[in-house]
Length: 110
Image (cartoon, rainbow, N blue to C red):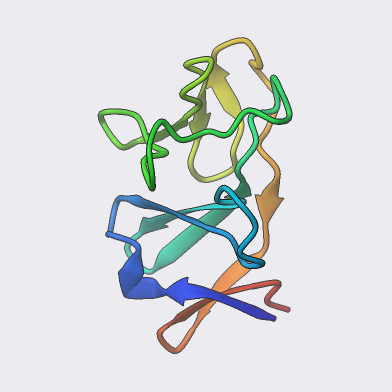
């Protein structure tokens, strides 16, 4: 289990990028909807090394209802990471297992 951040570090309805091993760009995208947190690897399935965000902690479209790849304009459902618009239609972001324990958002919750 790895602590990624505090729940309150992620704005409700917003996103946050984290890097649990402090190497370079954010490796994990966190999206919060109320008490629920969704986590994905920060890689577009259309091109594996393309990070999703267009600037620090900005991973959502204007309406904040989809994850958006800044490089390709692809849109992904927040709940399951499936691409619904763009060049990777039908593919999915790599979902990660996270949960909230107390005030902490943690990776690999059993």
